[in-house]
Length: 282
Image (cartoon, rainbow, N blue to C red; front, top):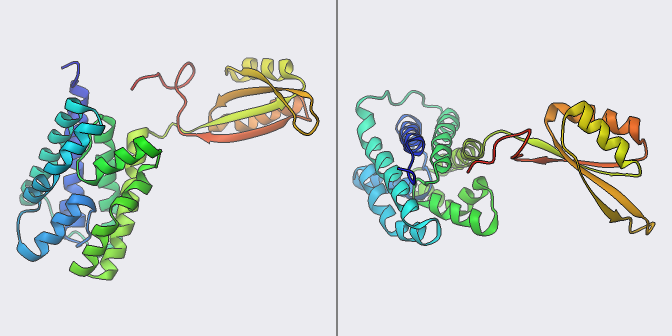
């Protein structure tokens, strides 16, 4: 249980339920291919009538080895197998209990289906698992190349979208792209959180005054190192600190008062972990 805590089991179960709901209530009735193995199963179902959930399980079997090899061995396999079986089983089970064809508007189907599916994927990712299919390929691309999840889905799902255009229509295929991109953004938000912070780099000739005011007024830590201005050839003191979005204007005021000639770069960071921010937990 230490390797598979109850928190992760709950996240995988909740994620599988949300994905199945998004499929059964919006994407399948709207004939919008979900991408990956799920989208391929929808296309095959269009011509054969075979159960989508069963085909998802069969289609994922060869991909389990890839995930086992590159994404965590037994731990990955157990979590992914649980997520895939729950997700696929619920897709075939929930239509008996859920309303279908809520709307004939393809835009609404794409947006709501994409967001619900994406949140479900993100919860499974947060539990250190995947929902199989191209999720495995997306995670591998993210691990090897640092490609964001939203871009990974577009790369790996292109062939399925083209297939859906032939099975359904080009118009529905384009709406499916909207659903895929939306689900990727939602998955990224759900898996990584919304703790976006600002990272400030300050080049100043008065590092002591600037850092003291940041520490005292904002209660934020500051790190200093020495650099060299390549134009002037002179040594420069460089300060670095992480702040919340609401503290940006306060930081600018502090710097202006302490050193009006300072050079400041304020960028966006997806997360800040450690003292004063989120705990450093996996």
